[in-house]
Image: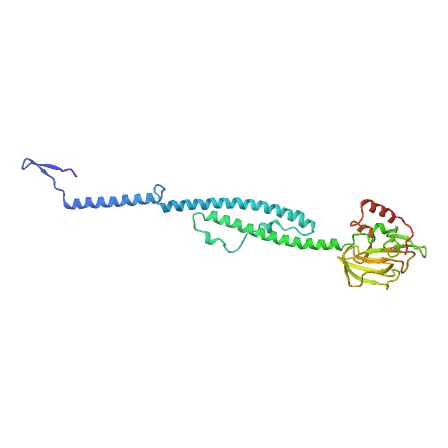
Length: 325
């Protein structure tokens, strides 16, 4: 209750009550209402911009936002682990797989390239955690691109491996006669004495002495291009095209076990030892061709001989003796 104020009236020699004017009263009421309104507005703004008072809905949303931030942290840690594993695969891909199969390594710039051009992340802008969300999304997109590049690279390596396997199977890599069937390795590749003219002559293959009828085996996968008696000196002979520039020739046979156009595998029985054509005794004359040039067959026996057997063959092959054809 407001205090009552008095003033001294000299005319009546007494104290009289001061009656406030109505305009002042209304002004005071207006000032009070205005002050209350401003105080309330200031208090409301203060409460809305601080964490002093939160509604249950706000508290729930705050917990949900914190949970999302935690999930993003976990996601980034998992992506870091994926990046480490992917980097290890990429290193082996470039330095082992692609090197082994003689393929060019994938440049680091291509593996790590980002995404240029239009802003792919515009829809993620304008939120409280936009920077974190955009950075995580970019990181995930780059990982996806790296995985796509690596997947394509491994597909290429698979194709190269299949081709390499075909090449290894095609190379004439075994001795065409079993060791137990051999009488001896009569003559090697190089200059030898001709059995008929006794003149020094280049011998383009290796002669394996064996009884007539001894089985002869394909030294690599391929296709029979000739099985006839129409080449001077070789008598009945077989030629196998192995692909990749390789060809093997088997001469002086007694009979065939294959025909022209037939596909054979390494180790298949293709014919039998004889002494047809220009031959002094039953034996197999064996040649290896690479890109239409005849080369020394002794370099291609890694698939069937032990080191001791190869050393013994090498010793006989290097002797400049008389050939059998």
